[in-house]
Image 1 (cartoon, rainbow, N blue to C red):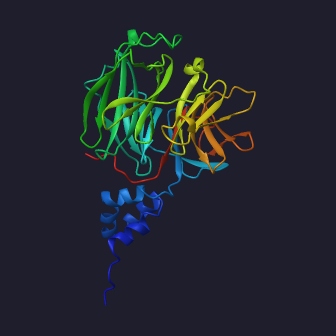
Image 2: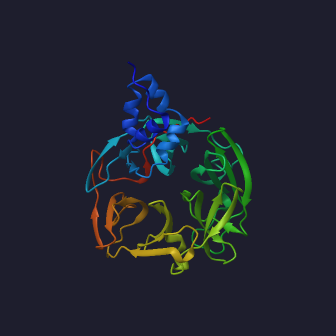
Image 3: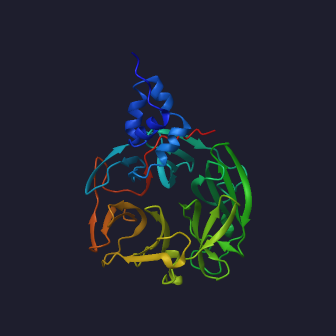
Length: 354
């Protein structure tokens, strides 16, 4: 007597609770499971689970790439054997990571499946020798598509880093790449009289929008701008009231626990926006040590009290917000230093959506 198959929705529920690596092993057990676990419906079901643990992806000074799946006091990394030399982690979304290599090529990578694809250069943007470019990576829920946004400005007119309020930026060109369709499109430029982006930084993806620090706007000082995928325009997000406006150029944006955060890298103050778009929801903590840690980017939480940061001194540090203590993060199987990094969730989303 042949036993009846479990309904698909029950199988989805069971498999979607497994880590991405375990799903990969299950796909090898039968053709039926391979087909089931490769469907877009299952991949979405797996992504919608709230139990995903954050992983780290890190770049070493020798341009190699390492991943950490279990983040704790003493953790173990694995080197990703990929034929590339890496210089920047632009951002991540749903387990896909956008990277820049030494040739300034954009590579979309799934660190779990090792699947990678080179993103074609934008024919509508400024050429590399003409100016400077910044990139952001996120998901457009309106079109069910992953997208890359590139901001570029002419080199001769790029913002004077010593003058944040009277920048020499002309219009910033904005182009958007659809991963699903494999095409670039030009959208409305970011005009200098409205906003200028004086710092070469990656866009931060939070709550369905990409964020940059910018000067200008109605206040005449610094603001946070958010690129809205729905209308392809920039909105302003309120910054912390107690942020020293004169320290704009020493600040970075980041994401922690799915929330927008802002760091004064000199004073080592960190703000987290608990409720997106609500000005009064910014919460601040300060890393109270005398040493200049050179904090450049937040990576993730360990539990509810500790935060992992990458520093300009090429190391990883862990700060306990509740106790006010600081320690180095030991990573076995990798060099002691890292030049950049990011957090991602394990999933099996394909880089070849088109």
